[in-house]
Image (tube, rainbow, N blue to C red; front, side):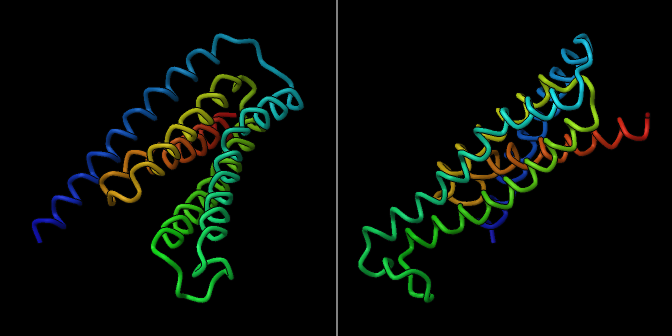
Length: 173
């Protein structure tokens, strides 16, 4: 039970750190964007898509990691079947989480670009937080939930923040 509670405390600390980092970085990006001139929709969408490069690159890396691990394992080369090695199971879990995070992040980024006329720095900040989060998640994954919590939070919270900022911008008109 103590081990579980220690793991929970570690997750809470990692997620709190990610939330604090997200609020700070998103707040600074919004403040810097506020001083910039508004951009037209096509320009904002193009900028947001370019900023998404590292986000989608993490998905490609996770797919490649699973493929690489399967290729070099006699047990895993045939694909699924439930009898995969722990290394492939871990890589597939990272891939699944990365796919989920990429879908959310990409949608949030597009919504921000479509909603906020001054969002260039925010787009870059969101992508940078995502990339850092995925790196920390990937490195920490095999060490347990508390070791990957900061990385998970830095991938997840910026997307939620982006949706909240876009929602406020829509309501404020």
